[in-house]
Length: 271
Image (cartoon, rainbow, N blue to C red; front, side):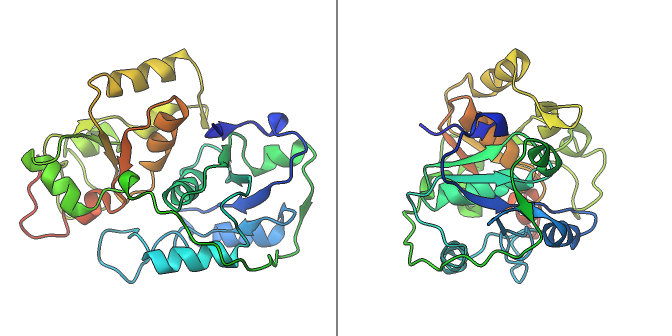
């Protein structure tokens, strides 16, 4: 099985398709600007707002695109289901993991996230360019993995007990507890959720792969229930989903709408 996270020093000379997922929540054009300045040769850029969200929807801050939009992205990116794919961002960010989750959802089984960010990748001698990639369009047909996606309706049934699962809130603890809420209208968390701050997966700004991480993830998964991970907008929960998969836990779903979608209904119950 393809590893979820890989180091650039271990990728060898296999032919890869590359996806540049750099983005900044503070400066939404920065990822495109960085890609335009320099990127891995033949890499396509997947923008969080333009490609991995549908901002015309009201289902949270980074809503899930329709399947037809995802198909168009995959085809325009020149991807086939059999491709070996490497995804990078600036390192330790949630954007490559978001892109990787979309590939998993579409049935791509040979995609990995680079542990290193773009600047480190360059230092390993991977060729870069400022020339915009123009892939040959494909006619790929995804094999949708709907079992890794959690809709609001699915989460509602988890809250009521109709669906058996454990909600895991990947936001900071003070937001989970409702002590502060800088972005959403209502503070708190989805009823029944436990908290695991996604930043705990990192050390010095980069994802950490050690016994501490393994133990932390084992603690979350110890009950054996299906895990439904969420955050504020579905972005920073994707690293938690990816890390669980990396450590062999394959019973997770990502609630892409996340808390911002949950509280978009006037009668939303929160704790």
